[in-house]
Amino acid sequence: MAGLNFDDLIIYEDNAIIAINKPPFIASLHERLDTNIQSIIQLVKDVNPDYALCHRLDRETSGVMLVAKNAEAYRDVAIQFEKRTIKKIYHAVVSASVALDNLVVDLPLYTDSKRRVQISKKSGKPSLTIFNTIKQYKHFSLLACEPQTGRLHQIRVHAASQNLPLVCDELYGGKVPELSLIKRKVKYGADETNKPMMSRVALHAFSISFDSPDKGPVSVNAPYPKDFNVLIKLLDKYDL
Image (cartoon, rainbow, N blue to C red; front, side):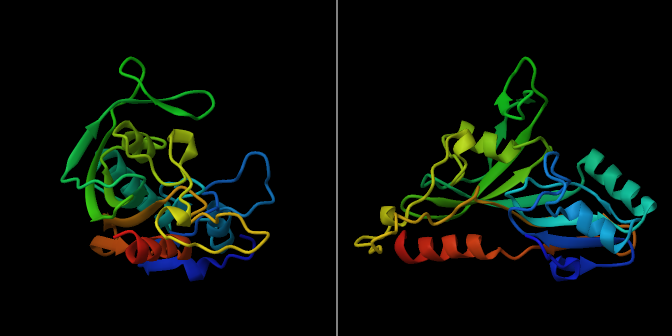
């Protein structure tokens, strides 16, 4: 992801807040083992050292992130996150055909020393996610996921707990989606294998609604990146 241009990522800006659309496969913060790999925080600080990330996304997750332009704006947004007044909607593709209408998953989550997240009533922190089906396919579903808390891997683990693992989320039981599952007579070259329809966890931070210290109530949508778009188009064409 070398060569990313911060300005190209901007999808909203006012005098206090910038919203960007983070591409997949780029870390929010510096990778501990490799400081040469570009990160969102590095991009932000290169533009202006006073800018600060208001929250983070997993490396593979794409979508909207908020950047505060000054300390006052950062504190304002941090309080909104703490009070849970900021509304975030993620879109996810799961390996199951389901019609969900406000499915509430209220299960405490615990993160172990290897950053693997588990459901634990004894050690876990309160965690709640609401799931709704946007589009149901024969083998998959596109879901809107609204986390009420912000735990590590929350959507992924809560979905998996309902036998709805995210596409490509092998850490929590998801499988790589092969085109042959939905399309008959797939032809491959002599040196090709069955190419996957997606090569990362199918999770995208689609929208965020918050109060900007400059503009008041703001809602921002982040368009799908190319790989997520391709997956949806394939499902629309071959899996209805």
